[in-house]
Structures are given as structure tokens and as C-alpha cells.
Image (cartoon, rainbow, N blue to C red):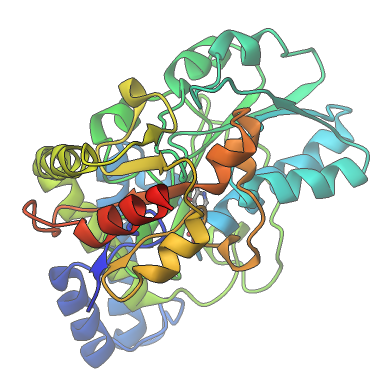
Length: 379
Ligand SMILES: Cc1ncc(COP(=O)(O)O)c(C=O)c1O
């Protein structure tokens, strides 16, 4: 198998998570909403245990965890769910950055068609938005500010602490897409001030198809979210549908592991980053995104003169990498993130993303990539 360096797209499931999921599939097959028999009651208990594990990782109340199918749904629920109330209250201004994930930008584009004013704050070539640029745009009719924690393409960590602090005393809701940081920047997320936070299990060694929206209370009041689907009334009426118990148990296990092991995650990922940077010294390259603010498990690199598509295809039997978000890499459009950072077309077309996790051997070799780049540059 090729060396997998696309952890920002999805991480492998931790074997301990998988073992727990298999146990649940084999032994605990009740519906968590069935209250009339032991199978349902036990499934319900498993869901509540996992809810507590995720709450523990994020230092929130258990009742603030709403299970969804992943960060895409969490982002949609946060944005569209709040918009219904905003429209009623005549608060139709929403602020975001130009480098958000499509799972934020597309619901926002939909709201724009419905009469909302969406303002995308520009981002400099560092890939990190200036918090002042966000805060100074807040108006009396601003309903929501939504900013991602770390960008999935560049790994650049955004100033969500500064923005959260500035918004904390106001009635503007603050949503953070933490798909790339939950389970990794543990202390940072525990300290963060926000109203809504999107989390995805499959970016933190849990299964695909499960995530959460954290809905924090201000005093005793929950943000006025409306559901975007209607059905069985699960998750406090905010997200109906039968809960996938085994996925939730796996997500809970992944949260427990992340809480216990995030410091090792950091040191192992940094060692891998050093090894990759050492090897890259054999060729000319440019780093995209300010390294001072970058996640330990990610690099976005341009090799001027090298076509990134050709590079990825040429080495795919040896190394698995990508050049953008997995959701859009099927249609070869230039990355909207790198475009928003104002990088040259040549730099964008030659950019690839390498992302990894602690299971990758720090003595890894990216020699096939280096050889391809050397050859391509000499042509
Ligand atoms: C920042 C960010 N937000 C949202 C998503 C979507 O997450 P999910 O795959 O859980 O729907 C991703 C996945 O690539 C992401 O990186």
C-alpha cells in the first residue's frame, strides 16, 4: 500500500475505536430511542456515555452535544438553523472568511439567495485572517460570525480566540468549524469562547458518518436554533433520526483517546513535520500559509514549474497526497483557499497538501515525490 499522507481528508480508524464499534455492532443492537426493553435502554446508555466522553474532550456540558452525521451537517445546522430565527428578528447580516470550507460557504451562498447579506472577510497571503478585520465589520444586524479553527488545506490556525473574546459580551452568535482541530488542539478548544462548534469524528481517528454540533448555552438559554430536518424528535428535536449507536460509541472512544493522548499526537506529528521539511530541502519549494500558525500535522507546498495534478498521479502508487479539500478535488478547480490568499496561478497550480498523524513512521521517505519534482524542474 502507498504511504498515506492525506489525514486532513480523513484519518484511519484507531484500532481501539474499531474494536469498540465491532463489540457494539455484535452485542448492542437496540435502537437508542426504544425505551420499552433492555436492548433499547442499553443502546441509550451507550449514546449517553459517548455524549459524556465528547463533552469531556471539549469541556462542555453533556446536554450541549448534538449528534449529527459530520461537520458538513453540523455547519448546515448551525448556519441554516440560526437563519430562520435571524430572518424573523431582522438580523440578516452574516460574517465569514473567504477561506471557509464549502460546507460553510455553500449554505451561506444559499442564504444570500434568500435575502441575507453575507460578507466574506478577505485573508492575506499568510492564510490567517486578521481578527480586527472581522470584528470591525460587526453591525447591529449581524446575526452570526462563522470562522474555522484550522484551515483544511493550509493547516493555518485562525484567531478564533480573539474573535470569540470580542463577541462574548454581545448578542452576535459565534460559530467555529473545528473539523480539523477537535481532538488535536484540546486545551485551545476547551478555552475557546463560542456559541456553536462543529466537530467531525473521522478527522480524529473515529468512524466516518458521525459528528457533533456543540450548542453552548448563554446563561440558561440555548441559541435559538431551529431544526433543518423533521422527524422523530431525537437530539432535543434539533436533529431527528435513529442514532447510529456503534458510530457514536466509536466517536466517544476516539474522544477519550484524544483527550488522553493529544500531547503525544503533537510531539509525534512535529517529528514527522521535521523529517518531511528536511527531505524537502533537496528541492526548491515554497510553503503556503504562515508556518508560525500551522498545525503540526500538515504542510501545503508549491514546487514552481511542477504541475500538482501530474505529481499526484505519478506518485500515487507510492504516496497518497492531495491538493485541496477532498470534497472538491474531483473537479480540478483551483483551490478557493489559495486563490483567496492571493497566491499566483503558478503557485496554486503547483501546490500539494501533505497531512499525517502519529501512526506514520517518522523515518518515512517522500523520495518518490522528491525525484519527480527534481525531474520536472530540470525539464
Ligand atoms: C474544515 C472542514 N469543515 C468541514 C468538513 C466536512 O466534514 P465532514 O466530512 O465530517 O462532513 C471538513 C472535511 O474536509 C473540513 O476539513
